[in-house]
Length: 113
Length: 109
Image 1 (cartoon, one colour):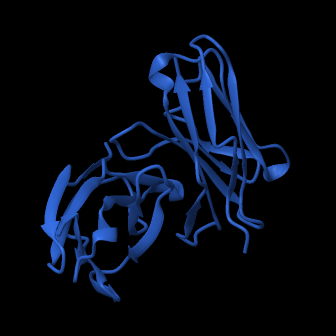
Image 2 (cartoon, each protein chain N blue to C red; image 1 turned 30 degrees about the vertical axis):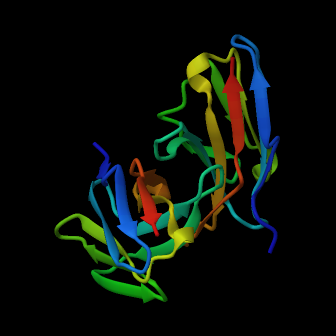
Image 3 (cartoon, each protein chain N blue to C red; image 1 turned 90 degrees about the vertical axis):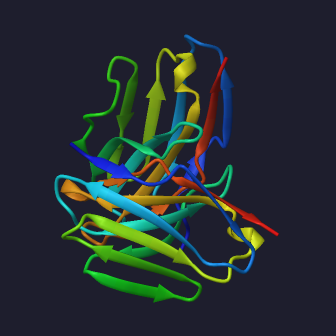
């Protein structure tokens, strides 16, 4: 089966600019996650979707981050405006409901200068 | 709160055995995962434990004790390519995956 697709692979922006990341999960996976992984740390959950509804966005900095999953398939994560501390890898993952099997995409490496 | 602890880094010799420990305190428990992550790459699945005991898969084994909130990953016959970060993660409330900080393993010749 095709994996979780993410784009772009790399992005460099200046602080205060905006940026968007895209994720296409594995077909049929109802649950989609966005994680932020800062260098040297484990991934931190930003937001969890089930179909097109938000299950958990308690750790999403909502003043600058937003995410949507229209039609319950693809998802976009946006940062506006970006700060230096947003430099990280943004990982998208998907899973079947209740299966425990999570598949990660290759991630988008964001550098804010 | 949610807390997952694992050592920051470990070093071992090629051909040896290494054990990476993980302790956790989470609200809800639907299983514990171990992932391997090479630098610049996405995490890849290694093992999953939901019941107490040992799961063996080739050179890799994982153990879980739910009463102690404890797991370990055992790597045998270490190879240079095993140098990577090893992430302990718990499937918590609502199925979300909570990660530890990762253990950076260096395998020396």
